[in-house]
Length: 90
Image (tube, rainbow, N blue to C red; front, side, top):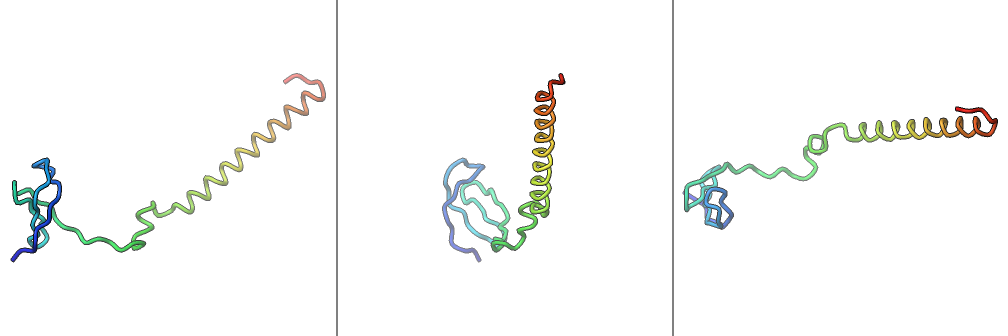
């Protein structure tokens, strides 16, 4: 019939009340609020979905873009330094 109840916070009652399991429903005994129980997923099962699927490729792309940015800034500093050493105005 029904499984033993446990106490939890009910969002409708705004207090800790006993909940009872009936099939897939977990029902508040005080007000009748219920939600559907979902089985827990084992760790690492949908890790690609959990982290966005392409997180490794995105990370590599960000590293490459940062390296390109550092090279561009380095070339600009080198150019400005050479121009100042040779006495040319920018």
